[in-house]
Amino acid sequence: MSTVITYGTFDLFHIGHLKLLQRLRALGDRLVVGVSTDEFNALKGKKTVVPYEHRVEIVRSVRYVDVAFPEQTWEQKRADIARERATIFAMGDDWVGKFDDLNDVCEVVYLPRTQEVSTTEIRQLVAAL
Ligand code: C2G
Image (cartoon, rainbow, N blue to C red; front, side, top):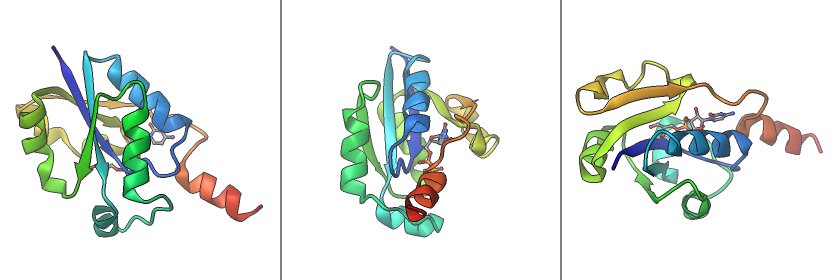
């Protein structure tokens, strides 16, 4: 049983998020996802539109996701990896290199982002309506 673990805000859930989760699930038998809480996003300096409770429920409902849990700190990843017995930590490649320090406890993988879509672009398009 190989568990893949990833993290994200998943604000205004879009095809880029879906394609990432789909590809991550294909790397193992199980996919667990840490969804950034509103408080943690404030810490990241990231403004969100959709509240955490909705974002985590949407991620939890995606067919590729087995478990979704709150991401509240940068430091919780090692404990999460141990708890979930994750063998692969994976993110989109906008994070390439940022989590290589985890490679003593699991494989670290960065997958290409889906081009032409982002939460920021969606916000700009909606604002221009
Ligand atoms: N992503 C993607 N393609 C896009 C947009 C996002 O593959 N067009 C990926 C990102 O690379 C990331 C995941 O989808 O792996 C979630 O993206 P965000 O919600 O923007 O996540 P972020 O706010 O970067 O949070 O501790 C890690 C952080 O919590 C990551």
